[in-house]
Image (cartoon, rainbow, N blue to C red; front, side, top):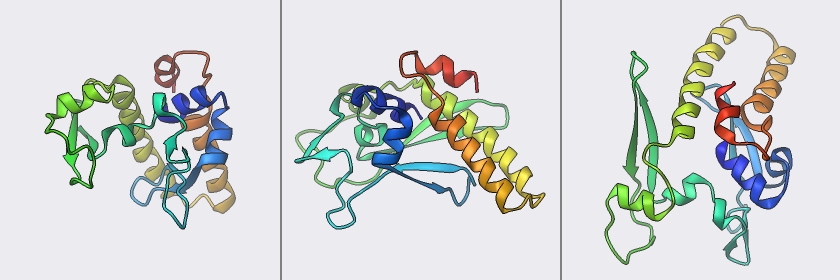
Length: 173
């Protein structure tokens, strides 16, 4: 959600328009929650935010782009302690000029190792996953399920004011 918020702000668009123009939505196979991903050209496999090989949102590019070739995950234990972890996805020709520590990589790409937005988002997702699994046990029907997912997309991703700070809005969810 934070990436969509930042991209919408930079492009001077609504989050809904960013989702419609640049993203696709599917239901996560393990989370059972709506997942929004950037569209890619089916032929060239280039990101929908690239224009003439240049990122349209280089000042607010999505975290997955800034992190590459690292992946990120959140470890949540049973006592609500959280820890951010990183996975190296292999070098695919990305910035071979030098070797970086994870901290150096994050700082070079304008990221913070204590990412409060990511931690808050991960805690929300953890809570919603548990809740959605409970709801699915009741077989609420296709119409109710579709309505539930529309509400989740709106509240999880779309219902933010880009003129206000993101984190306070997220913590109210």
